Image 1: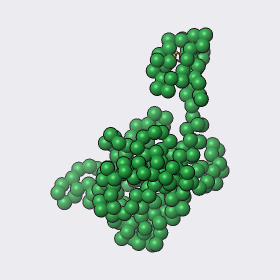
Image 2: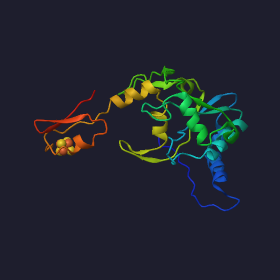
Image 3: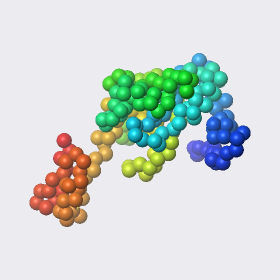
Image 4: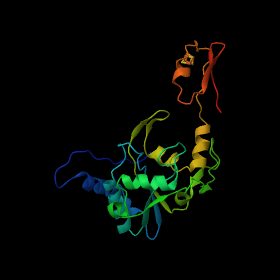
Length: 222
Ligand code: SF4
């Protein structure tokens, strides 16, 4: 079934700023028709990596939190830990990062809960019997929530072309173990026929995992 898409432009005046327009947009899209009463509502978001400025400002999250609370829900802001090393690979660093980016209870009106726990080991296998994945390992706090709302920015992505709501949910709700499964299904490979042995990939591989064997590039997946 085709989705109904609502959007607004970025034009503003003092009485119609972006936060006002966000509220108008989600109300028009029907957020008031959802039964939030007493329900744990996971607001899935990306809090931004340290040094990265392209994350949603907490002001937007605060609008969504306020509306869900007005509708009787129990919202919390959430994400799962990352597989890669950085400042979101365990719950403590992740919460510190969220706080540094302004996601404090005072600013957004609710708590940050890292869905797959301290070390990314808290997950629930949700059976979906999909073609590629039978039971993704979803962060427990997200899997146990009654309702999930995605708020996210749009970005370019090397595999999907574009990252948005589907990626925020599909990949982002995976626990560390779940992300490992997703990533291990897609690996770079050498088209040996076309390889002319220039060794550019050998010099530039960040993991030093490529070597030349008989003038053809070979990847060490380990
Ligand atoms: S050595 Fe690496 S970069 Fe050069 S042609 Fe082969 S695969 Fe491509």
